[in-house]
Length: 477
Image (tube, rainbow, N blue to C red):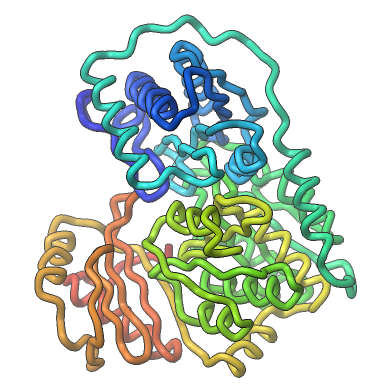
């Protein structure tokens, strides 16, 4: 990566390997791009911009540099008491406490990554058109070289935790009566959810045991991504409780979540989302529709429709779902990678909110969660869904381009009913789908599949790997 290479946003902001894609001069250019974009957005010469960071290496230094650059551009930076979860930053913008926000984070990416998420004034990540404008301004700043700025002045930082928890407490208070105190094992993966998420869980009456709660710039040497292979310790601890505990986890900046049922088996993202939508609808806290990504399984859609809720589908990337919340199309949103939000709380995905709802569910309905999933399957129809990550080697990428140019008519014996090409390749079948796309944040290819049951799903995913001429090695991510 050279310093002149353009800055590009993926599905969740700007991110890349630290000291390669992400450097201090490139951060300067990005922040200059954001500053100019804010003026174009009508924020004037002095927008209030909240600046925060997570536990990653150099996060505090990069955030301080961003504050200095914003101040030099005439805006009013507000420093968050960090490290802090991204959902709390977005919540503050949603409340009107700032006109926009920058969060120095690479979310669930490996520890060698860094980046920046840009939260727009309506409380969600910037959209594609906004990102392109910021990129264009950043490109010009890179070419001209931003002027040096004085060291940022020390100022008081704002607490985002107390207002968020108070709002969450008030909104969740509309739930039912607890039958007991659920036992929760919470894995923070060394991220910013530590401390905040446990407080939210305990306020739902849970007894909480925390794993990996110490902040770490290296996240224990692996990506802070709550996937099954990263949650082996959580699974073991839940199993040791003999069916009496629920496992919950959040990613590095606490905007994604994962659930391990009382038997120690992780729920898929779509199973968890179906339970959340069902819970909200049954307790009268979801009066509008539900926004879902195109890669999300159909069980969630069928559950929502069963409650009389309108469902809309949107491209992959939570920023698209957040816009559906902002324009009133939906009251809740969820995606295929552990993203979930409720407009009454915030418009950015929120792993802490999801975990609190599962604690509420466990306390009022009991464990295991799969008992409720069986009810949903009997009522709305069963299906199996999964996603995997594949190495994005040049041959696989070239093969994906070829498949998009000439999609197959049959896959694994099943006839392709329709083809969508706006996000890689999505093949729809009478009983599910197969979707292949390049990640917008990591050098991997994503493979998503749905089928009537797990056996057929395994065959469908194997057929998808075969389409890419892969050797089958992949990870659930």
